[in-house]
Image 1 (spheres, one colour):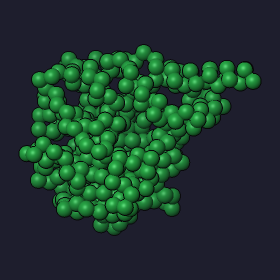
Image 2 (tube, rainbow, N blue to C red; image 1 turned 120 degrees about the vertical axis):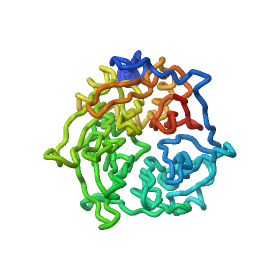
Image 3 (cartoon, helix red, strand yellow; image 1 turned 90 degrees about the horizontal axis):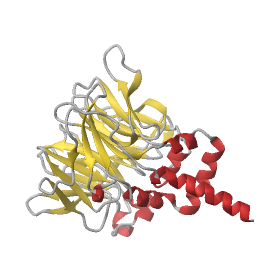
Image 4 (cartoon, rainbow, N blue to C red; image 1 turned 60 degrees about the horizontal axis):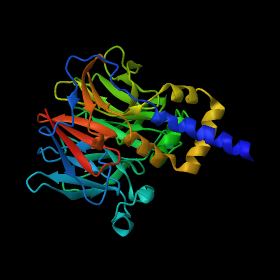
Length: 373
């Protein structure tokens, strides 16, 4: 009937308004002027062929890189001298058979490497693969092997990001949801899912321990410079959590910062500050939507009908000049803003500060962005 069509059309417009609303990610004052990525003399793009989405970036113990995971399940390495990418590793045991092209629809089979980090003592690369769990591969690359796929008897649903304590060798990582997989990330946010967990894996004992649970899409993780606490980007709630690992506060957590948008990865820079990548704005409508149970259910049904993940990416591309990332100190104060003047780089997933440059990962772009400071 006409009223049913009108009802669904109204819901569709309301949900889409989450991303169509005017968007400004500069509500903070910082100690410096915003960095503008679209400055042509300072910015560069490193093109990737045959895949998209260089989610996270890492350098090996010899300083080579960056390495990054892309949409067809490969981990690739940038060869600065030749100015090309070459294959380093894969996470799926079936990759050679079915995953030669950018098979995003087969990512549950081909793997989706997200967080990456090299162990400074062993030279091994640890990988948070969204479908295959926490994996590791040797210095020569090849087939990565899973070292942790569940904790407390519960399999990982969406392994996402990691960081390594190079003194103890312990790996800290996030499982964004035990209900939703990576390709259902919008459903995890809209539903208000709070089954996310933060864990640690000890390579010596081979034990995986849950440190924090009941989280709403825990995403990026980053250790403090002295190793006393771990920062966690909780995407749905748009905030940065601090989990204390040492001192008298060990085992407790608090909120370090509330953010104007959805945080993705968080990386510590050489000075001990943290770059937080912001995916997009969380507006008043989404706050309202997440507070109403029946409307969340209707929206989830709509997502299934409209393939909302692709629609969401399209509308983020059409947004205005938004901030891409914030640099925070250990107290959660904003020190610097990476300006999003260049629409071509949005939305981003990570900012890594290294060798006087900002290396920028992406959700769906066929390149890595580089900004010379």
